[in-house]
Image 1 (cartoon, rainbow, N blue to C red):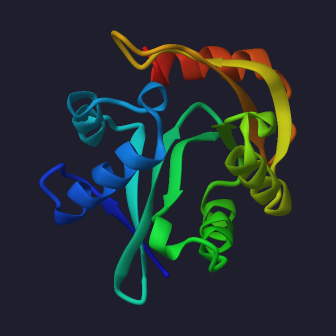
Image 2 (cartoon, rainbow, N blue to C red; image 1 turned 180 degrees about the vertical axis):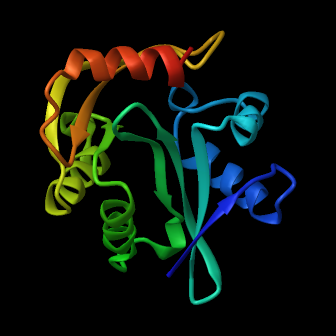
Length: 170
């Protein structure tokens, strides 16, 4: 498995990533194209293409914040799901980013949300905040009540939330 940082929206993989991103994540859980493009010039952000057997199978959008990495989006493309590739990606994350925070839909939102939560639990994450609100991504988009997970035990969840709000969703 290869993990290649994409440094330009002109990269041929970005079209496939954005298409899947728009299909997988609802309108309120994602950036519009114009806002996504700005991430390529943000020094705190890494957009990583995940390749397996020379095929682009998914991507990560990571924010390197004060003393942890925030995973804004993590997706294995639909045709590659249920092959344990997500667990390999999680292993890569743990090896390269020892302190990880991510947000997910609460498990009671439905079967897919429950499946994702179980996946993250199996792969070393635990719930740190059930009262987290993902701010709106922009005009016409709603804030969402999500859960925060981590692979470590943060000392101050409020400070983490404040930093995510200030930097990721500014």
